[in-house]
Amino acid sequence: PFDEAFNASYIHAYRKGKRTPLKSLLLDQSFVAGIGNIYADEILAACKLRPGRSCARITRKDEENLVVHTRRIMKAAIAAGGTTIRTYTSSLGVTGRFQTECTVHMQKICPRCKGKIHVKYIGGRSSYYCPHCQK
Image 1 (cartoon, rainbow, N blue to C red):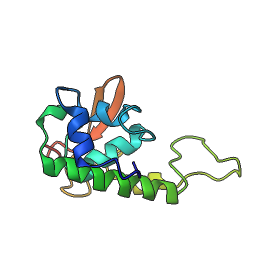
Image 2: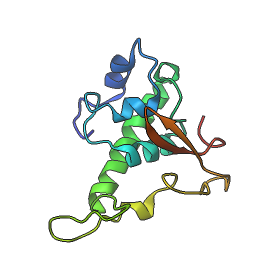
Image 3: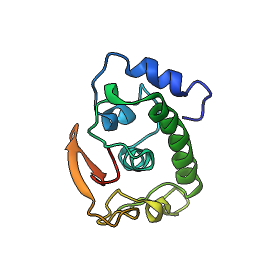
């Protein structure tokens, strides 16, 4: 996601003719490598896009937001040492800290609107989102 080639035009060209849910698109390692389930949820929340929304139904502004928020969230996750949900530790015995910054993944209440976070399964993966804030 940090390569200059990852931009709105790239997203537009890659998604052309597809109706894949946005969550599945972000998890597609041939689209962009390194985005996992947790980060996809957080990227979509930051962009205010529902994980089940078809990638055919986004605007140029949405594509630009996906680039900005993907880079921001992935940089923050790397700086935090990743995410430890259960028992992961690095080779140095250090746990990740990004889970403390998650706004939707494994959360119950949306920090924006204070509404309930919903969970939907997309492509066999849990997808956390706020139905009020994410369209």
